[in-house]
Amino acid sequence: MAGYETIIYDQVEDKIFRLTLNRPEKLNAMSQGLLGELDRALDEFEADPAASVLIIRGAGRAFCSGYDLQPTQQAPSARFTVTRDRLAMQKLVDRWQRLWALPKPVIAQVHGYCLAGATELVGHCDIVFASEEALFGHPAGRAVGILPTLSMWPILMGPRKAKEYLFTGDSMSAQEALDWHLVNRIFPKEQLEAETLAYARRVAAVSLDMLTLHKASVNRWLDILGFRALEQSAADFDVIAHQTEAVKNWARMSREQGLKAALTERDRPFARK
Picture 1: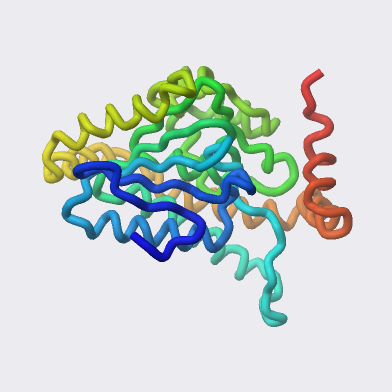
Picture 2: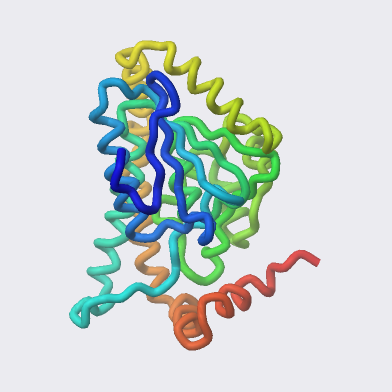
């Protein structure tokens, strides 16, 4: 379990393990380094015969603010192309579908912000518990792109509510997320960790063989509905979105004025009055 820099992966107690996103100074924004460590930890969890249940949480004052939008150093040959962009988006989809297909139960423990790419993470967990002050949304949809997997929103809360929030990028409260089936339960913030662990203990009391079969049987239903093809198609639409003038203009502003200024301008028309 050693060797991680942007996550903490540890055993809580018998059969129960926990993965903590650990970039609190960045609201746990998912950098390429963090995503790579997430993949490694999931491999470790899956291969461990002593591990039955995984809890995913965030350090600090938020669960996760989404993907890290800070520019990264690229080799001169790494020119942006549609093909390169499409491959990157497909890899994102593959990552979250791999989480969904993990044979063991995964519980998301959400507090504070859960935005953009973070909604993809929790959308592909099996169970989601949230604090009452948690906020969910995709503000990046205003000028950056669509959710490559749509975060399972059309499946979990239906097409009308999915469109309502995607069209504006507005955030929904924990209660709204509960009402529309994006989360299973909500708790006061000070009770969230204890309640999540209490449920994990109940899950861990069931044999791992039965847990894997329960999960596979429910997931098979979504496989038959074609959710994997839906997400792959959504990733292609995200690539198309990146070629629109709106996204190109925002990217130019981000380069010239800085990310903070670009985010402020993106969200200015949507400020609550």
